[in-house]
Image (tube, rainbow, N blue to C red):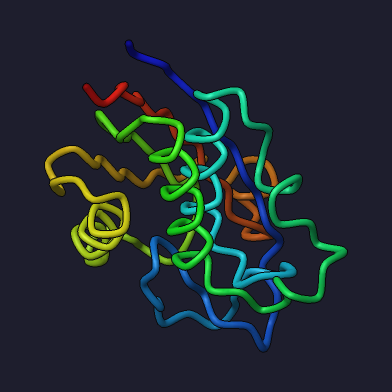
Length: 159
């Protein structure tokens, strides 16, 4: 049995925060604002995984009203999502994600992001696609006010 899920996340860029995407700390003058580390890429992936199995979203699972998750490492939250989906009998077939950011340039970090996500999801990096694009200086991402990410995940029932 195959299930497909889509995830989307967005966070505002602010000063005095680290920029973490796909579990990689990226040198930049601003970082993403959020209750956790605000890793939009991992958040989109988690929402896609949960959505594929009709399990809600990360806001339901890890509410920003819960101090337990303040400053949380999103890779650890991804571990929990993987545990839950495995408990339901599913594994990742593949992940296709896109990060939308005017800057910084993300190409040098893409392979590390893929490897990090694959490791946590217990799959091969070849099953994880991470792409980056700009919006040609249009909208909030183009104006460097924030970064967003989309992810589509195929979940497979384990036999």
